[in-house]
Image (cartoon, rainbow, N blue to C red; front, side, top):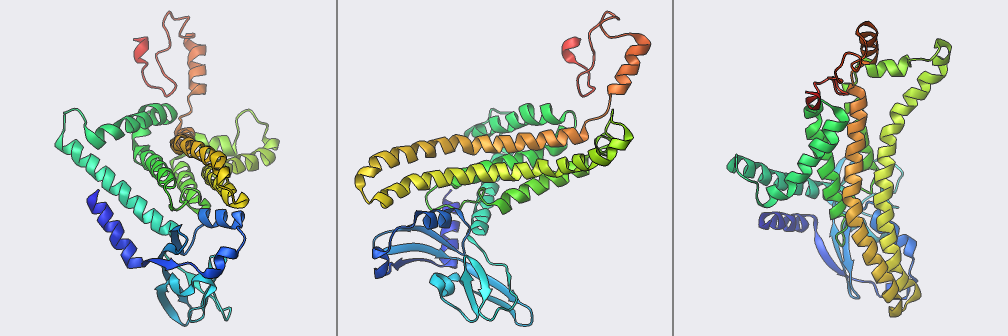
Length: 363
């Protein structure tokens, strides 16, 4: 943990952490809750931690811009903060543009990119420590961080992967665990003061959904594609309608994953900030006796939502993969019953589970 704090401090020093005095004219300006809330939940080229009456504590992140014919430009976002212009660069609604209207490609380290790097580092340090504990304490009872995270790993394996995917679950466990802990950790980090809204960014949730779609499609077997391009029990003239509907369904599933995670996390942040904004809207300390308890309640509720949304995303991902890898066995079982009678007629119970493996309970 000390190494992590030291590394984060060095990162803040590199990108330019500063405490700037607030402008004198800002005190007289009216409070705009919508602008403040959207600024906190949206991505930005600077990391605004908190403000006091006299200072703004801001980390200015590096701007990396490429212009065809002019080359690469790297500078601090401090130069274009507050609507200022640096060279021919400026920010318009957090979008990097040029004053002369020329084309520019923005590869800047934004707030969400920096948060992604830091959360990935946290995940790497945590699970590297857990892996070392497993190697060091092989055959012994888990302890410490290993003991805290092992129940979640076993839950994802036994209650999500095995039940949703079946015998082929092992090859998908690394992805399912990565998705679960990545979403959960970033949901929790997003609740800390001044943190980035990483899992509330639709680009991040969209990337996770696209990965799920790619894994699902590349894992799909003949049975999966047969249900899409030749739906069973459907007359062939209806294929003209059913096939496009099935293909749309393939895209809608990951799209729903993207929207669900993005909407739930962003809505939680907006509600909390809305309650806090009531104090500044009514300009009365008495309002705090109502807004602060409600905001605290929503914050505690968000702790539950953070792990719930990670679980839902992982469960639905496993279900989509399971439907793609499931083997077709209904016709075989039907013909088997016609030739030899049902299992009950033969005097024995069914010796096969849903995935075609021996049923231990039956023996």
